[in-house]
Length: 297
Image (tube, rainbow, N blue to C red; front, top):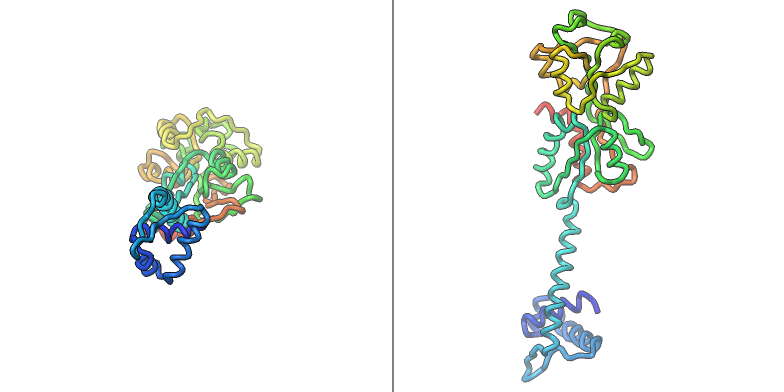
Protein backbone atom coordinates (compact mmCIF):
# COMPACT_ATOMS: atom_id res chain seq x y z
CA UNK A 1 0.00 0.00 0.00
CA UNK A 2 1.43 3.36 -1.07
CA UNK A 3 0.47 7.02 -1.07
CA UNK A 4 -0.18 6.62 -4.80
CA UNK A 5 -2.92 4.09 -4.05
CA UNK A 6 -4.53 6.48 -1.57
CA UNK A 7 -4.41 9.41 -4.00
CA UNK A 8 -6.10 7.32 -6.69
CA UNK A 9 -8.74 6.07 -4.27
CA UNK A 10 -9.52 9.60 -3.04
CA UNK A 11 -9.95 10.85 -6.60
CA UNK A 12 -12.19 7.92 -7.62
CA UNK A 13 -14.27 8.36 -4.47
CA UNK A 14 -14.68 12.12 -4.99
CA UNK A 15 -15.52 11.91 -8.69
CA UNK A 16 -17.52 8.68 -8.52
CA UNK A 17 -15.91 7.51 -11.74
CA UNK A 18 -12.78 5.60 -12.65
CA UNK A 19 -12.75 7.22 -16.09
CA UNK A 20 -12.93 10.77 -14.70
CA UNK A 21 -10.37 9.98 -12.03
CA UNK A 22 -7.97 8.64 -14.68
CA UNK A 23 -8.38 11.84 -16.70
CA UNK A 24 -7.85 14.04 -13.64
CA UNK A 25 -4.73 12.14 -12.59
CA UNK A 26 -3.39 11.84 -16.14
CA UNK A 27 -3.31 8.06 -15.85
CA UNK A 28 -4.56 5.28 -18.07
CA UNK A 29 -7.94 3.94 -16.97
CA UNK A 30 -6.59 0.36 -16.48
CA UNK A 31 -3.92 1.74 -14.12
CA UNK A 32 -6.60 3.35 -11.95
CA UNK A 33 -8.71 0.18 -11.96
CA UNK A 34 -5.67 -1.88 -11.00
CA UNK A 35 -4.83 0.41 -8.09
CA UNK A 36 -8.36 0.06 -6.68
CA UNK A 37 -8.23 -3.71 -7.15
CA UNK A 38 -4.86 -3.90 -5.36
CA UNK A 39 -6.28 -1.96 -2.41
CA UNK A 40 -9.28 -4.25 -2.19
CA UNK A 41 -7.07 -7.34 -2.28
CA UNK A 42 -4.61 -5.88 0.23
CA UNK A 43 -7.31 -5.19 2.83
CA UNK A 44 -9.65 -8.03 1.81
CA UNK A 45 -12.57 -5.63 1.36
CA UNK A 46 -14.70 -4.23 -1.43
CA UNK A 47 -14.48 -0.48 -1.86
CA UNK A 48 -17.01 0.07 -4.61
CA UNK A 49 -20.16 -1.66 -5.77
CA UNK A 50 -20.24 -1.85 -9.55
CA UNK A 51 -23.86 -1.53 -10.65
CA UNK A 52 -25.20 -0.69 -14.12
CA UNK A 53 -21.80 0.52 -15.33
CA UNK A 54 -21.54 2.88 -12.36
CA UNK A 55 -19.62 2.60 -9.10
CA UNK A 56 -20.91 3.33 -5.61
CA UNK A 57 -18.71 3.59 -2.48
CA UNK A 58 -19.35 0.90 0.10
CA UNK A 59 -19.69 1.63 3.80
CA UNK A 60 -16.05 0.73 4.41
CA UNK A 61 -15.03 3.05 1.54
CA UNK A 62 -16.63 5.98 3.39
CA UNK A 63 -14.47 5.22 6.43
CA UNK A 64 -11.33 4.71 4.35
CA UNK A 65 -11.91 8.01 2.57
CA UNK A 66 -11.68 9.97 5.84
CA UNK A 67 -8.34 8.36 6.68
CA UNK A 68 -6.98 8.56 3.12
CA UNK A 69 -7.86 12.23 2.73
CA UNK A 70 -6.28 13.11 6.08
CA UNK A 71 -3.09 11.22 5.20
CA UNK A 72 -2.92 12.93 1.80
CA UNK A 73 -3.43 16.39 3.30
CA UNK A 74 -0.80 15.78 6.00
CA UNK A 75 1.69 14.48 3.45
CA UNK A 76 1.16 17.48 1.16
CA UNK A 77 1.55 19.82 4.14
CA UNK A 78 4.75 18.06 5.19
CA UNK A 79 6.19 18.35 1.69
CA UNK A 80 5.26 22.02 1.47
CA UNK A 81 6.87 22.81 4.82
CA UNK A 82 10.04 20.88 4.06
CA UNK A 83 10.42 22.37 0.60
CA UNK A 84 9.91 25.88 2.02
CA UNK A 85 11.91 25.30 5.19
CA UNK A 86 14.76 27.44 3.83
CA UNK A 87 12.50 30.49 3.81
CA UNK A 88 9.82 29.64 6.38
CA UNK A 89 11.98 28.46 9.28
CA UNK A 90 13.47 30.31 12.24
CA UNK A 91 16.92 31.90 12.24
CA UNK A 92 18.38 32.13 15.76
CA UNK A 93 20.87 34.95 16.30
CA UNK A 94 22.96 35.69 19.38
CA UNK A 95 24.86 38.93 19.84
CA UNK A 96 26.31 41.43 22.30
CA UNK A 97 24.88 44.71 23.54
CA UNK A 98 27.02 46.91 21.28
CA UNK A 99 26.25 45.01 18.08
CA UNK A 100 22.64 44.53 19.15
CA UNK A 101 22.23 48.28 19.53
CA UNK A 102 24.02 49.62 16.49
CA UNK A 103 24.35 46.95 13.80
CA UNK A 104 21.91 44.09 14.17
CA UNK A 105 18.63 46.03 13.71
CA UNK A 106 19.70 47.30 10.27
CA UNK A 107 20.91 43.87 9.16
CA UNK A 108 17.67 42.22 10.28
CA UNK A 109 15.61 44.89 8.49
CA UNK A 110 17.43 44.16 5.22
CA UNK A 111 17.21 40.41 5.86
CA UNK A 112 13.42 40.59 6.38
CA UNK A 113 13.06 42.37 3.06
CA UNK A 114 14.54 39.28 1.41
CA UNK A 115 12.94 36.67 3.68
CA UNK A 116 9.73 38.19 5.09
CA UNK A 117 8.41 34.80 6.23
CA UNK A 118 11.53 33.76 8.12
CA UNK A 119 11.25 34.31 11.86
CA UNK A 120 14.37 35.90 13.38
CA UNK A 121 14.88 35.07 17.04
CA UNK A 122 17.46 37.28 18.80
CA UNK A 123 19.28 36.86 22.12
CA UNK A 124 21.39 39.77 23.42
CA UNK A 125 23.79 39.21 26.30
CA UNK A 126 27.50 39.37 27.11
CA UNK A 127 30.04 37.52 24.98
CA UNK A 128 30.55 34.55 27.31
CA UNK A 129 26.82 33.83 27.50
CA UNK A 130 26.32 34.17 23.74
CA UNK A 131 29.31 31.96 22.99
CA UNK A 132 27.91 29.26 25.28
CA UNK A 133 24.59 29.39 23.43
CA UNK A 134 26.46 28.76 20.18
CA UNK A 135 28.34 25.79 21.65
CA UNK A 136 25.06 24.30 22.92
CA UNK A 137 23.45 24.83 19.48
CA UNK A 138 20.82 27.12 20.98
CA UNK A 139 21.60 29.74 18.32
CA UNK A 140 22.58 29.34 14.67
CA UNK A 141 24.87 32.36 14.30
CA UNK A 142 26.50 34.79 16.69
CA UNK A 143 27.90 38.28 16.17
CA UNK A 144 30.70 38.96 18.63
CA UNK A 145 33.25 41.66 19.36
CA UNK A 146 36.53 39.85 19.05
CA UNK A 147 37.38 36.21 18.61
CA UNK A 148 35.61 33.13 19.89
CA UNK A 149 37.27 31.18 22.72
CA UNK A 150 36.47 27.91 20.90
CA UNK A 151 37.80 29.01 17.52
CA UNK A 152 39.01 25.50 16.62
CA UNK A 153 35.35 24.44 16.37
CA UNK A 154 34.07 27.58 14.67
CA UNK A 155 34.07 29.51 11.43
CA UNK A 156 34.91 33.17 12.15
CA UNK A 157 34.28 35.88 9.57
CA UNK A 158 35.37 39.47 10.37
CA UNK A 159 32.91 42.07 9.11
CA UNK A 160 33.65 45.36 10.90
CA UNK A 161 36.41 47.13 12.81
CA UNK A 162 35.63 49.16 15.92
CA UNK A 163 37.77 50.61 18.69
CA UNK A 164 37.54 51.14 22.39
CA UNK A 165 37.95 54.69 23.71
CA UNK A 166 39.26 56.00 27.00
CA UNK A 167 36.85 58.65 28.27
CA UNK A 168 37.00 61.04 31.21
CA UNK A 169 34.83 63.87 32.48
CA UNK A 170 35.60 67.34 31.15
CA UNK A 171 36.32 68.18 34.81
CA UNK A 172 38.72 65.27 35.36
CA UNK A 173 42.36 66.09 36.06
CA UNK A 174 43.41 64.14 32.92
CA UNK A 175 40.96 65.96 30.63
CA UNK A 176 43.48 68.61 29.55
CA UNK A 177 45.94 66.03 28.30
CA UNK A 178 45.80 64.67 24.76
CA UNK A 179 47.06 61.24 25.74
CA UNK A 180 47.90 59.14 28.76
CA UNK A 181 49.86 56.01 29.49
CA UNK A 182 48.06 52.88 30.58
CA UNK A 183 49.97 53.05 33.86
CA UNK A 184 48.35 56.44 34.54
CA UNK A 185 45.03 54.66 34.99
CA UNK A 186 46.28 52.51 37.85
CA UNK A 187 45.41 55.19 40.37
CA UNK A 188 42.14 56.23 38.73
CA UNK A 189 38.67 55.10 39.73
CA UNK A 190 37.61 52.77 36.92
CA UNK A 191 34.06 52.26 35.65
CA UNK A 192 34.04 49.11 33.52
CA UNK A 193 31.70 46.65 31.88
CA UNK A 194 30.97 43.43 33.75
CA UNK A 195 33.24 40.34 33.64
CA UNK A 196 32.27 38.14 30.71
CA UNK A 197 31.66 41.03 28.34
CA UNK A 198 33.89 41.38 25.27
CA UNK A 199 35.12 44.79 26.43
CA UNK A 200 36.07 43.53 29.89
CA UNK A 201 37.86 40.47 28.50
CA UNK A 202 39.94 42.67 26.22
CA UNK A 203 40.76 45.16 28.97
CA UNK A 204 41.71 42.45 31.47
CA UNK A 205 44.14 41.00 28.93
CA UNK A 206 45.47 44.44 28.06
CA UNK A 207 46.15 45.54 31.63
CA UNK A 208 47.63 42.17 32.60
CA UNK A 209 49.97 42.21 29.59
CA UNK A 210 51.21 45.66 30.63
CA UNK A 211 51.59 44.81 34.33
CA UNK A 212 48.89 47.25 35.38
CA UNK A 213 46.72 46.25 38.33
CA UNK A 214 43.08 47.29 38.07
CA UNK A 215 40.26 47.23 40.60
CA UNK A 216 37.13 48.80 39.06
CA UNK A 217 34.85 50.57 41.52
CA UNK A 218 31.89 50.15 39.15
CA UNK A 219 30.91 47.15 37.06
CA UNK A 220 27.80 47.36 34.92
CA UNK A 221 26.06 45.75 31.95
CA UNK A 222 24.82 49.22 31.05
CA UNK A 223 27.11 51.37 28.93
CA UNK A 224 24.80 54.31 29.50
CA UNK A 225 25.20 54.02 33.28
CA UNK A 226 28.99 54.02 32.90
CA UNK A 227 28.92 57.08 30.64
CA UNK A 228 26.70 58.93 33.12
CA UNK A 229 29.16 58.03 35.87
CA UNK A 230 32.03 59.43 33.81
CA UNK A 231 30.06 62.61 33.11
CA UNK A 232 29.63 63.12 36.86
CA UNK A 233 33.39 62.65 37.28
CA UNK A 234 32.98 59.49 39.33
CA UNK A 235 35.75 57.76 37.40
CA UNK A 236 37.12 56.97 33.94
CA UNK A 237 36.05 54.28 31.52
CA UNK A 238 37.05 52.52 28.32
CA UNK A 239 34.07 51.82 26.08
CA UNK A 240 33.21 51.07 22.42
CA UNK A 241 33.28 54.12 20.18
CA UNK A 242 30.00 53.04 18.57
CA UNK A 243 28.26 53.28 21.93
CA UNK A 244 29.65 56.65 23.03
CA UNK A 245 30.30 58.69 19.88
CA UNK A 246 27.21 60.87 20.45
CA UNK A 247 28.25 61.55 24.05
CA UNK A 248 31.71 62.59 22.86
CA UNK A 249 30.15 65.02 20.37
CA UNK A 250 28.15 66.64 23.18
CA UNK A 251 31.50 67.39 24.88
CA UNK A 252 30.27 66.27 28.28
CA UNK A 253 33.02 63.68 28.19
CA UNK A 254 36.52 63.84 26.74
CA UNK A 255 38.22 61.16 24.68
CA UNK A 256 41.92 60.54 25.33
CA UNK A 257 44.45 58.50 23.41
CA UNK A 258 46.30 55.73 25.24
CA UNK A 259 49.96 55.81 24.27
CA UNK A 260 51.32 52.73 22.54
CA UNK A 261 48.14 50.72 23.02
CA UNK A 262 46.01 49.26 20.22
CA UNK A 263 42.35 49.36 21.19
CA UNK A 264 41.12 48.22 17.78
CA UNK A 265 38.95 45.10 17.68
CA UNK A 266 37.13 43.19 14.98
CA UNK A 267 33.48 42.23 14.97
CA UNK A 268 32.92 38.63 13.88
CA UNK A 269 30.00 36.59 12.59
CA UNK A 270 30.61 33.08 13.89
CA UNK A 271 29.02 29.65 13.43
CA UNK A 272 29.92 26.04 14.12
CA UNK A 273 32.10 24.34 11.50
CA UNK A 274 29.70 21.41 11.38
CA UNK A 275 26.57 23.56 11.19
CA UNK A 276 24.40 23.32 8.08
CA UNK A 277 23.53 26.85 7.01
CA UNK A 278 20.21 27.28 5.26
CA UNK A 279 19.94 29.61 2.30
CA UNK A 280 18.51 32.29 4.58
CA UNK A 281 21.36 31.88 7.10
CA UNK A 282 23.92 32.22 4.30
CA UNK A 283 22.19 35.42 3.19
CA UNK A 284 22.38 36.76 6.74
CA UNK A 285 26.12 36.05 6.87
CA UNK A 286 26.58 37.87 3.56
CA UNK A 287 24.70 40.91 4.88
CA UNK A 288 27.13 41.01 7.81
CA UNK A 289 30.09 40.81 5.44
CA UNK A 290 28.60 43.72 3.47
CA UNK A 291 28.16 45.88 6.59
CA UNK A 292 30.74 48.48 5.57
CA UNK A 293 28.67 49.15 2.44
CA UNK A 294 25.32 48.90 4.21
CA UNK A 295 26.09 51.37 7.03
CA UNK A 296 26.52 54.13 4.48
CA UNK A 297 23.01 53.68 3.08
